[in-house]
Image (cartoon, rainbow, N blue to C red; front, side, top):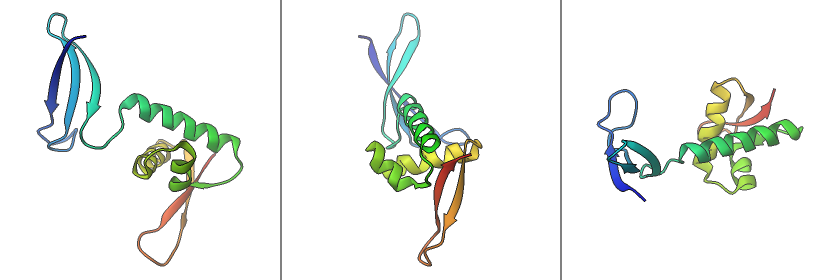
Length: 113
């Protein structure tokens, strides 16, 4: 099974200060596996799975989706959906167009190039 270790970010460049990760590891061979995080973020495997699912639906459908619609479709947290959409957009994998609602910040509809 292995021992449980906790890793805490001290801040600066690569992580948000105070973020904690729960690792399952082995002191003998120094192998570790990320099993949980306390920052409300998804594990990398789940992020990749959702990213692939988002790309697949955006490729198949000839419609534009908001991050909220994608969150409903894949039954995930809307904030996780928003972050994945931003990541896919900044990587150049999807396009977006702003929706002006005259209240607050604009939000976007996303589609595959």
